[in-house]
Amino acid sequence: MQNDSQSFKDGFLWGGACAANQCEGAWNEGGKGISTADLVPYRPEKVSANIADMDVSYEEALRYMDPSFAGNFPKRRGNDFYHRYKEDIALMAEMGFKVFRMSIAWSRIFPTGYENEPNEAGLAFYDRVFDELQLHHIEPLVTLSHYEMPAAIAFKNNGWESRGTIELFLRFAKTVFLRYRDRVRWWIPFNEINMVRTSVYVGGGCFRSRSTMPLESLQYQITHHQLLASAQCVKLARRFMPEAHVGCMIARLETYPMTCSPNDVLRAQQENQMNFFYTDVALRGCYPGFARRYFRDRQIEFAVEPQDEKILAQGVADFAGFSYYMSYLASCKEGKEKNAGNLVASEVNPYLAVSAWKWPIDPVGLRITLNRMWDRYRMPLFVLENGLGAFDRPDVDGRVHDPYRIDYLRRHIAEMRNAIGDGVDVLGYTMWGPIDLVSQGTCQMSKRYGFVYVDADDEGHGSYKRLRKDSFYWYQKVIETNGKELE
Ligand code: BGP
Image (tube, rainbow, N blue to C red):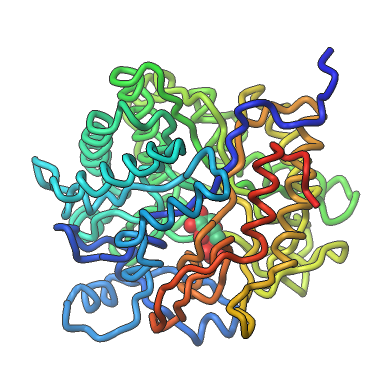
């Protein structure tokens, strides 16, 4: 028996996570093509009504493709990581990061997605980023697809609705595997692969109006193609980088029954199952029975080819990654009051406080989720995202006091430690958005997650100067003590 089961193992991967489209900026520099994320405008009227609507229609996208269209597109600016990566990586190193989760923008490497040869300037940019990380002994963990793709693929293929997109994606994957195989050991093909249930545009580069399929069938068609692409990525990675770890990732929607009525319990179980559907396929290599039933009951039909079963079975991932922000409630009765949330909104849980964006805060839910996933897969788990979006304001001395963020993270890390004490194997923790970045759901810069404040507003005004918040020093201590010191 181990003496100290309630502690993080040596080499635990502490760090932070971001996505190219939310931090890089430089949307039209270095030969980059226009991506689907570059076409998402800031819509303040939706933000004030607390509607996180990320969809862009075909007609809107066509208009936004015109370079002379004047609009506010925050994901084109990000937090300017493209020009400031050295400073940002130095800040992460100062906190003691062991790992930095980032994504590669597909449209930097293949501007339209259809080129035969990659864009060397794009590849060289990530060379520089990986060099810098290496200099500071920080491991990169790379997501290949984090809510963006070359816009041309959205227009020509309707994104992931088309099976042809798999081949384009694999060309991109192979290119970056071969280029970076000596420096990147951790890979994730898709961020939150279940996003497509919320937005076919963000999750699948797909315009709803351009498809003739009923919505749910379309969503699972996209998913099927992405699962095939993931499995083939695993296979490719094993061929070129036998030492690499290739995981899968969902936004974990830990769902509790609203009451102890067996029907509510069953509903919660079904919702949890359909949330695990993606990781079940990626980690077990086949479609689970409950999903087949779900498709049957709801007349969900999508194209599957005879070789697909084999493809899925041959590309089983080797760790289970997930984001965790909150828990959800399931009930057979439609409730009146809903909170907002990551990907989906849920009925109000009276036991939980909420953030300024009405996202419930449930640290114990992280322990529950870690246990549930460990029980299900017996595979190493990676907490790839967790964090609190909040309004931060520097004081007169230019300091940012963010006790609420420290409190949120402390309580979640403590519950992760509890889960480790329960016997769960956790590889690492990459807190979301260590340097303030543009919000995925609302496009706000003012929805801040970071340990480092970025002087920029929702319109892109500001110096983009970086300021260490109080939480910066707190996280530094957490890492230094390998999670022993959380106060
Ligand atoms: C996750 C996404 C991230 C991220 C985070 C916070 O679902 O993977 O890209 O942004 O949520 O969400 P938001 O930025 O909407 O607050």
